[in-house]
Amino acid sequence: MNDSANSAMNADHESIAIGALSWIASDGELMTRFLGLTGIEPDQIRDVASEPGFLAAVLDFLLAHEPTLNRFCEDNGLEPKIVARARQRFGGQFVPGPGDYTG
Image (cartoon, rainbow, N blue to C red):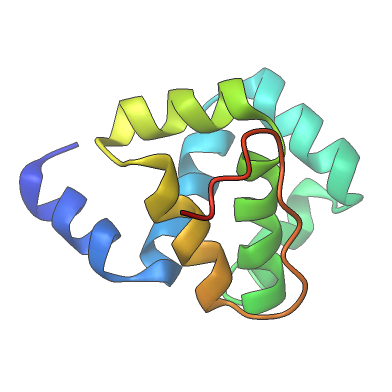
């Protein structure tokens, strides 16, 4: 990811979630797991991709599995706490995962 895209992701919780969704979608195994856990159908993603609750669920998915969170962060030059803060910005019930990256 280039520096300007990384800066945008750091600045905007929605951009982080959308970037995470794109990252998940690029890995067939992860996408299958995400779809299975959320119960959403692949053809529904476009319709719900901009909904705050769905974007929060994307971040919950990352935060619930530390190895996946770490891979996403490494691939995108982010700290796990940035992802946790982005999730908190969506409000609602926060579902911390292993490592509880809220700091």
